[in-house]
Image (cartoon, rainbow, N blue to C red; front, top):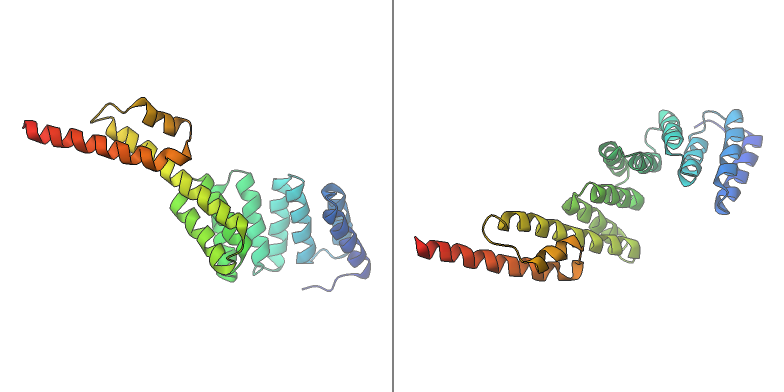
Length: 213
């Protein structure tokens, strides 16, 4: 890594302080001044990328992480943050790939696991998302945000299963409105009950059809 210029160090710390107070646009200006003096410092590029993420400037953030990774391709945090920025741009497959790269470098990178889980949830790949949150909890059992997201993924997985079962059951029985309402209203608390009732209705219809043969 290149040695950071003394004046660049000053601008770096000023940018850090501004990030702490939520002044992310001003922090970007400070990081730019630092980079004018130490253009090959990957930490400066990474910190600028972080500030740009917080400012909602995701395209620019990705470009910063690319700069950081060009200097230090083994920076797991830069890969994770690039993935996070790409996800906000709708590039979900690329975001997952970045998280995978981060985890190949640091298998216990909690934010990479959480980012991966979040993106997979957006992609409706709930089983894989659950695995990510379970991985976080195996590293840090007290991380409440991971437990909360894990439970949400379980709810969404159950709802997706109910929606699929309603479509399939409609070929055999008239699906009651109350069951359709559970799916339509995203009534997660009643999903398991609705699935059980629907399976019972389908089972009865299939048994009756066999008896009529």
